[in-house]
Length: 114
Image 1 (cartoon, rainbow, N blue to C red):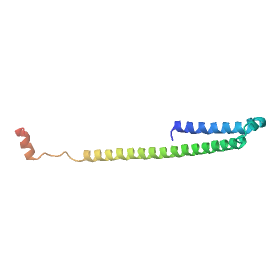
Image 2: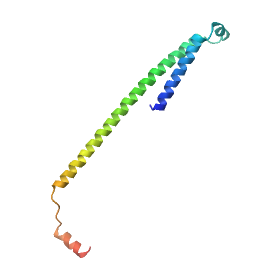
Image 3: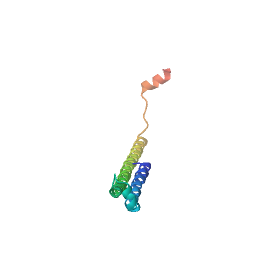
């Protein structure tokens, strides 16, 4: 989950919380009587519940993503260190070996220009 996705998840969840709180606490009983086809109090509590669940899930996913990113980064760093150490060992092994001598056939081929 990227930072943008986290912001959208938190923003949407807070929006649901606010709309739910308005439906439950701010709408007057006389206005609730005008809307007869739906119970605004029940709808408000559903929105509040959806907002709380959204905040919890967004936080959980963000923490999980952060932990996974850290593991991937740690594995990458360990691989880089191992690769550097292998290169250093190979360079040290090459440096400790005596220089290779050419065969006489190689000298003849070099002298002929072929």
